[in-house]
Length: 298
Image (cartoon, rainbow, N blue to C red; front, side):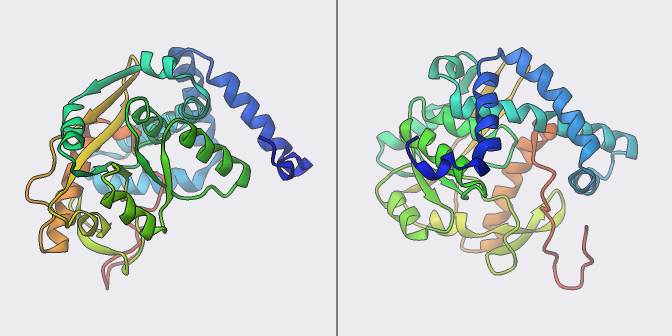
């Protein structure tokens, strides 16, 4: 990297962290998992606020779990967060050969057939902690547009974009609607994880684990053209590596009713979370926006 401003002393901690990530990416999968779990438990003890948010979210979504069971899942969630530090390192610095060796791909024909049929594709996903590595794994065989939010750390932001672009991605900022629509029009598959609370102006309320949840309505709007298909795509860690799963394009989607469309995608996401509950990003305020008259969860 030849941008001189990044050699300012204030970026020294970031460069040190990058060096550690490069070393971490060289470790075996089992070693990364072992160390990551230890780091995750350290984070669990250090950061009470995200720990409390995760506890509230899991308690609400799994009301049949008692306090001890919820606490166990929260701890497992932090272990997954610790492992995700290495998963991010792998996304940035691991070789294609290493990522391929850890990867099991299922039902990829749904994507390849849609591309062959010259359809516009939205890969609908969710915020699971291995998300960054999932984006990199997609690029092993496909040219994909990644919808991303710029990092607060400018150096990390530049590295992230450069890594993905060097491996064939088109990087589009989440707020760059013009470029997003252009990519869909040009039949470039879009990888899109809309499961965050963006407030009442950009969301509709739809059930998510039986909770009325502010759900981004843009997925349905982006898919309104008849030539566009929405293919659920999920990337999760298994005992031996990573599983990349594609599902059949969503039938009869979008619905004319935005709430019905949001309910459909929430149900798909729910089903995947139930398979890997410890890997979902429970630490963000998924239920921050409440219907009028409801009290704040947090």
